[in-house]
Amino acid sequence: MALIVQKYGGTSVGNPERIRNCARRILETQRAGNQVVAVVSAMSGVTDTLIKLAREVSPECEPVEREMDVLLATGEQTTIALTAMAINALGGKAVSLTGAQAGISTDRVHTKARIVNITPDAVHKMLDDGNIVMLAGFQGETASGEITTLGRGGSDLTAIAMAAAIKADLCQIYTDVDGVYTCDPRVVKTARKIDEISYEEMLEMASSGSKVMQSRSVEFANKFGVRFEVRSSMNHNPGTIVKEETPGMESVVVRGVSLERNQAKVTIDDVADRPGISAAIFGAITQANITIDMIVQNVSFDGITDISFTLSAADLPKAEAALKAVLPNLGDKATLRTQGGIAKVSVVGIGMRSHSGVAAKMFKALADAKINIQMISTSEIKTAVIVEETEVENAARVVHTAFGLDA
Ligand code: ADP
Ligand code: ASP
Ligand code: MG
Image (tube, rainbow, N blue to C red; front, top):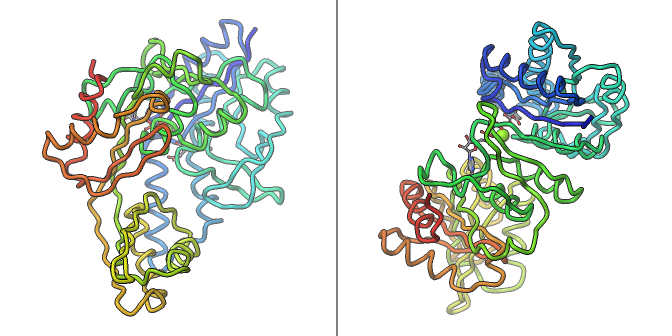
């Protein structure tokens, strides 16, 4: 008998028929002689609808984050109950548990809480009593009993963290594609399913826009050595195994291509070239709770220079307000410029550590397609560029082809 954690995403539980499909699959897994904990997301679109409702009742200010969590946690609470009902209707025995009931303790950072501890006593007890445990994804509770959520896509984290806590034999992430592809298959039709990928590559892909896995969940899996499989809830095809790096993996130079839309660029022209300027700029940005991505500073000329950085377009108004307040401290001539409508394309692969020429090949492919590169950043296993958002899909396709990833 194996102990199996499965996770079904929003599309997989998107309507009553699909919930029954998941219920059948979960029940089959149990009837094959296993204990099953099944994590579910909210039905597709529900979390977005709840966020929209919150904004509509609170147009004057951002809704209080504590209340956001109370609201957003209801999406998953709906699907655990519905899936448990469907399993029971099919002749199985299922019990639903919220994150709190399942012993998932988090810190107090509402809307993006971190799991600090899991006490899975209730989960074990229900399993030992012959139940399927339907576990609400994306949520936990603080030490003082407040409801928290784990950031968008957080049901992936619930599944991986619970798999670690109960020492599951298998962790399966069921979604609406057959696995992790060399690029989003909805954008690059010639993308191929990857059989095996290292945690590090999966993490870089997830954090550069491949939203098939929540990046924090991959970080967690890496830290605690939780191997998992990403596969489809609609068929029985083998998926993608995400696991520790093995020797053969480095022979593939580029494992995949990611794209991230809705980016924006902030440029501060003519800032004084003296100590403390960057600290003032990025101190203000941090104070405003904004995460930034690429940073570029020009070589200075006549004691002045330019600094640009990118961020999520949604954070642009907050960033502008924060920077206007410190602009007078950045030099007499400093001016602020912003630009939306840009996007990022990244190539990722641990083989980049031992192979050169990746950046040149990427830039050549973009040049041949007449796509202008606005910014560049590199890390040990990633090269990323900023392009016009209207060109991002074409950019992903030509880069995908250039690295021989097409099916
Ligand atoms: P779920 O609701 O199951 O959590 P998500 O929508 O979060 O599903 O993730 C699955 C989606 O991720 C796919 O439908 C696909 O469009 C997108 N995606 C982006 N990049 C990739 C990739 N490299 N491989 C597979 N899917 C990807
Ligand atoms: N329902 C949450 C979201 O849409 C969590 C998840 O689906 O993983 O982000
Ligand atoms: Mg997801």
